[in-house]
Amino acid sequence: MNDFFSQLRQCFKKRRKFPFDIIKIIANLPDKTWSLVTALWHAVSGEARRRAAIARLQKADIILASPRITTLSPIALGYRLFLKSRYIHSMLYIGNGKIVHTTARDGVVVNRLPRSIFRRERYGIFRVKNLDPESRDRVIKTALMWRQKKLDYAGLITTIPSRLIGLRRPLLRWEKNRIWCSKLVYKAFSAENIELVPPEKSEGITSEDLSRSGIVEMI
Figure (cartoon, rainbow, N blue to C red):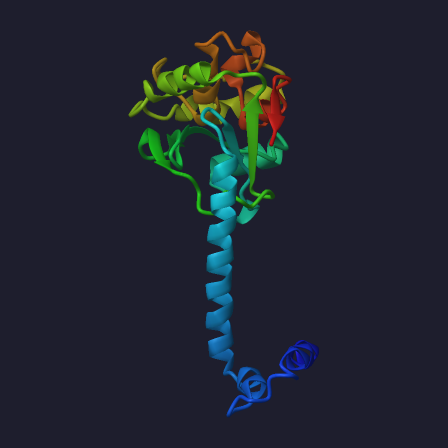
């Protein structure tokens, strides 16, 4: 910190007309003030990086989340530990800073993008290659048709043991009109005859499978 203020003092060397020593004032700011300034700086820079990340997005981009292990739900933790999945949640970007995805409480919903979307260690953005704007719009329209459908807990949970024993579909399903996040993304593209994974593997599709699809590229 002393080196920083020494360099800063050099910058002001030719500006001694101040009626006070600005460097000394900066150096003697209380710790709480420094904490406030630091927090403000992180907030401002974080928002700038968020806007830059949003500017790179296109409709129908696939956003995959890789949260810290300490924040994972029991189901997500199972995917991380037993299936070695880096990505455990899928979202589809629909434009205007919004996504369609699934939540445990409400099923398929539209929400705003995560605030920390710019953090590459937490979010991967994947784009289907050579997808024209009209197809992007139709993919989104299909995904939105699933709004308010409930989460398929049984399929989501039993995908873990089924994958461990080599099966291609969950051991148990509740209802055909229930769904989970990666299955939602798969179905939205499948309606446009775009198979993110082979159809025989789609019944137990995971977010990790989406990240390894041969027709997507990470941006």
